[in-house]
Length: 546
Image 1 (cartoon, rainbow, N blue to C red):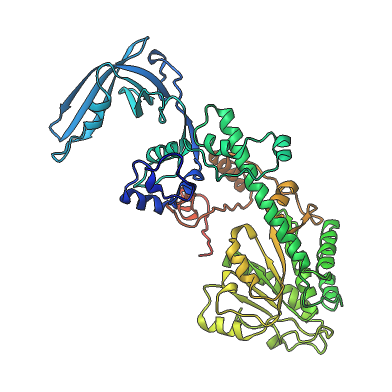
Image 2 (cartoon, rainbow, N blue to C red):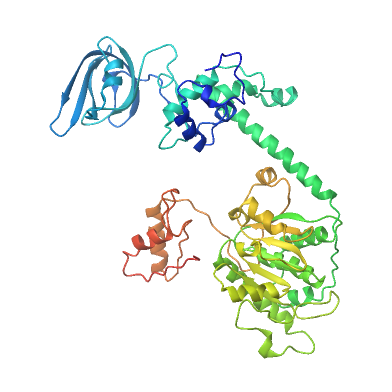
C-alpha cells in the first residue's frame, strides 16, 4: 500500500489494502482497475444504519440497527453437520438472544471471525429484523471510531458473485480518506454559487459516505448537475457543428407526389400537423442537414407527417428510409404506406399495368424505381427484415427502391444504398446510439427525423435531445378520441379489462419482453399469457414479433 501523499488517481487498485491479484481480476470484471475508477463507482442505493431504536422497541418485520453489549456466547454442533453460534446481548432496556448458523468444516474454523468479534464485554452494532423465531441478523460490526458498515448511512454498490458490496465499501472508505490534488473543479464559481452546489472533491467523498441525508442529496445533486452540464456542452457543440455542414443536395417542392397524397389522405391535416410539416420542409430546403425530433401521442398521425417528408425526398429524386424497432411495426408501416403509394401510382399516366403494380413478395418493388425529380413517375417500395430469406434480401439489395422500410437489418454491413438522403427512425428510444449512427453512415449528409410517442416535457427534451430541433403534435385528427393514461395496480387493471370486454369491447395487453429473462426484472408476454389464460370464458390470442 502506498503512502497517502504518493497515491494518484491513475494508480492501480492493487495498492489498496485487501486487493490481491485474485481480487484485482474480480474487480476488473466490474470495470474497476484504478483509483479513479473506484472513486467514480457511485452507489446504486443508500441504507440508513444509524442506531435508531432500543431492543425493547424492536418491531416485527421492521429493519433496525441496535447497539448492544455481549453478555455471553456458546456454540453447539448439530447431528446434520451444522454449528450454531449463540450470543446473549443486551442494551439498557432488555436482553436478546441471537444465533448464527454455519456449515461445519474440517479444513478451517467456520466460527473464527464470529468468536474473534463477538466475545463477552464487546459492543456491537447489529442490523437486522425481528421475526417470530428471533432477531435475524443481516450484518454486524464491532464498535469503533471509524465504523463503515454500521451507525451511519452506508452505500450499497453494484456487486458480483465474487465481489460483494461490503468489500467494495471497504475499498471506497480507503479511497475517500485521500486528498487528490488532480481533481479540479471545472465549474465556474458563478455557476456554483448560483446553484448552491457542493465542491466536486467534497461531492466525490460525500456521495459514498454522507453524514446525513441532506449531505448525500447535495453530493448527488452536484454530480448529477455535472453529468447534464457536460452532456449539454457536447450536444450543443454537436448541434452547432451540424449547422456548419453544407449539404450536398437540394430538395425541390414540386408537389407531383405530395398533392395526390394529400388529395387521397381521407382527412384534413390538423393545424399542428401543418405547422410541423412546414417546419420539416423548411428544414429540408435549408442549406444544412436536418436533425429533428418529432413527438406526438398515439393517434396523432406522426407517420403521415413523416411520409410527407419522405415523399418530398422521393419527388426530389432521392431515397427515403424508415426504420422500426420490430418486424411487426415495420410490416405495419409497409402495409399502410403501400396503400398510399398505390393511390399515388394509380394517377400515373399511362396507367400502371395492374399485374405489375404490386408484387406478392414484400421485397420486390411496387413499380419501376422513381427516376426523375420532375416527372410524375411511379414510386417503388421495399421492406427488409431479419427474418426474410437470403434470396429476398439479395433482391432488396439489387433494387434501388424510393422508399425503404425495415428493422435493424437496414444498417447491416453488407447493405448499401444508392441515393439515401432521408432517414426516419420510429420509436427512436428503442434503438441504441450505435445503431442510429450505423444507419446514418449509409448515406452522405443524411436528413434525420426521429419519432417518439412518449410525451417528453420540452425542458427535458431539450436536455436529452439538445442536438435535435424539436417538433410536437398535440392535436388529434377530427373524430379521434383523446388518449387517457392511467396508472393502476394489476388487479384493478384486469378488473377494468373484464368489465370492458363484458360491454362488448376488445382489449390488448403489451409487455416489454417476449420471454422471461433472469437478467431483466420485466414481465413477459409469454408468462402473462399463461397466467391470464385462466379466464377460460374469454378468447385469448398471443402475438409477438420474434
